[in-house]
Length: 524
Image (tube, rainbow, N blue to C red; front, side):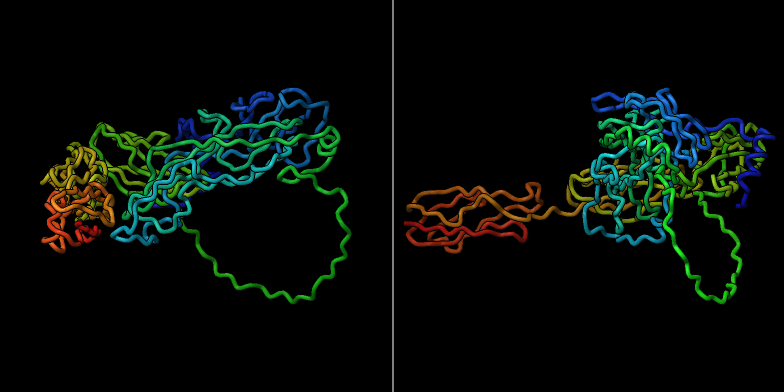
């Protein structure tokens, strides 16, 4: 059951009723990243964060922060690069449990059952940052937009186990605290920077992998990319002119005398448009609408699958905390007595969804296993991870794996299959009394070419010569065989040893699978 909740009404209600007793440390508003005191060397660190808007400040050589708000009354006494701080004009709250975007909904994805290529696994260093290539003039309150494209985010035709890196946030700290995280791709200096210099920025990404059933799913792997950007020098006259001018939302000066234009209004007969009101729809998506827990059991499995830094969860609360309670991070804990209640999830837009929670005394047993294919293929020496889905998702019965033929393929306790040799085996996935069998085929590794063979050789009667062919790849499952077109002239053994018999010529054929090469033998 879902319903729309006005954000303002909810906020007032939570303050007056005490429904929310705490807020996650990762969720904050009206903050921004600031820089340390600037030196002539590359600046790796920044100290403070301040993105408060609607604040009237004075511009002097003290430790003041400057906002990009219009019509700020600045008074300038002097500025030094050592006082500069880099900030973003607006820092959004970042929640780590982001989900699948609309444009990557598995229902809209076209995925081949048999991948025609190896999974793409780009490195985070392949990500692209644009907008910070040239030296920037950091006037007080001046902001610049930049763009971050994560490695693999342009993958429009994913296959199973493809990977990509989604940009999350940036910071001027390599190991930022929650208040040093910035989710808006915009940077500026509150105090301004007079001198040219070089600075560091760290952009953080979260790894995703593609699942044919569920689409793009997040891992726990977060990595950062370090880039550098430069400030351009600002003269005193440029700074004075900047401070004394009106600014737009980006801090750019607004012309004091706009050009004179005499508009000629067109003759228009207005026709009122026909509008059919469309009721608002709930945009949020959750991975389940009901869960079952044993008394005292906890779970964090309930997720908003399309959450983003700009469309985030702002509150969780329970209709009956004696049955089940929930903390600000979405961890639901069942009480000591059985019963039913609802957990409400509220988004930053005011949208909300209710999750039915049933608490029982007995152990939560597995009713079914899904999320697996009946047949899979894995090459020799390669691995494949099984990701079974239990129903209910709060099942307290563990998952186990076993292989019927470990000589063909093995499986670990975490569901990772490894191909050993060509053949077929069955992997049994078990939870409680429920089973799911996956047939695993390890195909033969074919020979792609044969190297190490001369096109021709000459031998004296009675002499021998050993051929030393090499298969590519070396682990090909197809053996090498030899054949002579004229055994009266020369013979060849199963080990590739040629013996010259009498004068003449013959051709030795070396074959592995469908690949073959020839060597002409002349006996003198």
